[in-house]
Length: 283
Length: 140
Image 1 (cartoon, chains in turn orange, purple):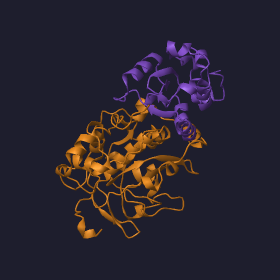
Image 2 (tube, chains in turn green, yellow):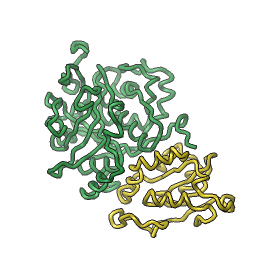
Image 3 (cartoon, helix red, strand yellow):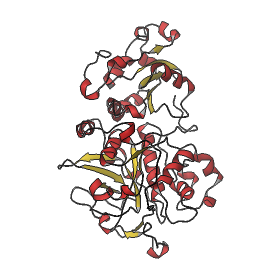
Image 4 (tube, helix red, strand yellow):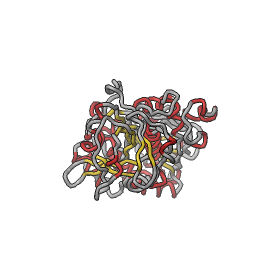
């Protein structure tokens, strides 16, 4: 992709070289103030797990890591569009289905993006993506044109199949303890980060170099580990293909990457999905 | 002791055995002696309020044992996890959940009917014990 192909004049909609010679785009709009939510938080609804409790879940020999469970074939590519919110929400939804042992269905995030971007390819907001996944849903990718971004580009078949793939009301989360609890309890999360040039460098432990700002990019979070300093590290599948990071992934921490973005964006945990009435027949 | 299995850390899991809210089995199924639940089961539905998981982490441990569920699948017993809030959950499953409470496990026949329902046991070994029980011996 040529850099000149992508319009970008807003702080939330930026283009970077991923270090492998590919240009990648963000697209997460940071509101001036954090949206007010009526969602229950993890802390209020469930309570947070202790670090010991999380360690016990992570130490279970039968537990697979996200990298084992969702390998490179699960990594998406948002291409030339500022559709990170939709890609993050779809990645989290697909994983939530997998945990329920539902058949794998690849969703078409462009449909979701077209519902929340106001008709132009200039990014979207985190909580809009969440609300649309509850009410409208997102169809399988075979009904969606890659890199489309307008509602008018979505087919009647896409609209007809969107409601098959929706999520239940998520939980809000506002701290690293809540994020770690959610991941340990098999919820998949969507958070905002602020991508700058250091984001594309991983340290020797695979952790993304620190970046700070109001948050210009949305990502899914699908795993947690505890480092030697007792700090939670969170794994994220990117939406920039497998040339980004470590096979499309990188570890992030609250203090390095989310302590500022959480002041602008409502992070959420997908607790479960609705069933696909056409494809999820059980026995 | 829970279904002959006591190999979980009840303190850590915080599982209240007194919370076992009952179980049901179809009378017609009960009368067929000699058959195990495993031989009659085509699917297992584990249903939990997602908000239960913080208090009952064994539900996560059960989910995470994908090798166990994959092996059951290979043996012809499908498995699925659901929150009772899932709109498409069949009315007969919602009725079973209403009777037993959550978390619960439903054993389904190949026509989708509920053969047996029970408060979710804390281990896969306990689920195996249930599957290997003679249907006539399953406690009500």
